Image (cartoon, rainbow, N blue to C red):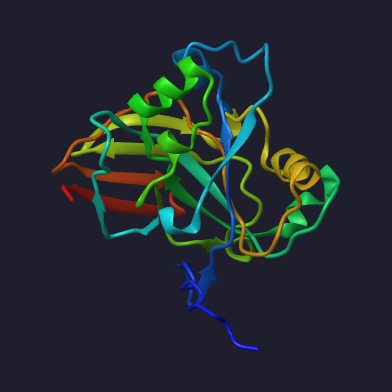
Length: 229
């Protein structure tokens, strides 16, 4: 029997060297850099990182225009290493976790900070602050077969040419294999899943007219410009 409504389009990201990576689920890690946890008013030694999700339609490819979202006047950038999975599973051991990795990229967890703050104050879920069109700009995906396992790499974000965030992926509290292992126990993982692995300190506002660039060392770059709806 056929579908009674048209199935959704496949969301994808370009792969360096050719091909497209089909995006399935997007998992995001909260407070995975100690300095960012502190700047957000948390103690990184008191609680482990936690997870939230974004939908595939939040993806925005590099070189595109990001529409400033409605219902907010305080949207923040959060620079992140992206991990793209080629396979999935449940209860993955830490030492086997890297076997699931297809490649890496750099992304921005865009956040409606005003709506997120309201949700925190009232004990509501975070979706209104984290989920909207263009909430997850992403670079191309660079295969692990080309660059190897990425345990150390500089990561930075600039707005209109001024550096706002800078760090190294080796500063993550939970490393990539630990993230994969924990997610596989909580939810189960699938091919096409993207993992946003947390942001270093320096998160801040974006505005209409801004040009934003994110870099993952010499591996890849993401560029977007912000426009009004």
